[in-house]
Image (cartoon, rainbow, N blue to C red; front, side, top):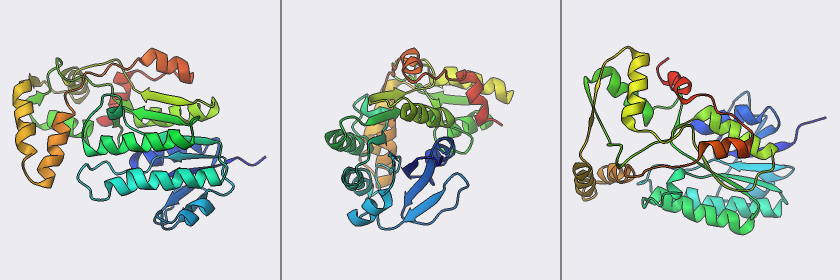
Length: 291
């Protein structure tokens, strides 16, 4: 018996590649893209103009589900609203016309905490569109995603620990994290499809912890001894304000600093129970960043 077909957007990205590999255990993966691609986990590729509703409708023909992962995360990219909002709207309408039953949208935890940057606002609008036309959709909001292939966020933190004797960090009183490994995000999406989950879920990989706590685990794996120095909150806020007055790239950094002031609090045990999946220990997952 042949596997059902699942349409996946963003299949060539960091998370998308892992989603394709994980979901291919239960589905034939059809990647929808603007360009050709070749991955062993992708059975077929429909490349074309994602601004064309007819192309999207034909690309979804015969599919049983769609996982919409494609997005622009750069807050200053001029195509951010076009891709994150308008493309989502066209894809949703095409999925309705193709009579798809299962729609999974990959959002961001920033929405949960009402972050004000353009990227988060675009995700808020996209979520509204998905739920308007697919009230039974599954929307997942991953926290900070990490893994060996990623070069951002925690990977940058690892580089700092490798090179600097003193590592500045955001204080625990204003910033906590719940990072999740990319493989766990992919597994939870697969579980969501298997269990026919509906609604909005935050995907997290640990209980709330500080940058310093994460750094202490990483320094142990790296065989380093580092001083993790909390940056005064007022200094961070002032820096964010001043950067917001500068160039586009400076404003992008400003948004990142503003988003640092979040005390995350998603319930890990509730997530595991809902998706029937026990996440591997967070410290074990962190090893992937130093291998």
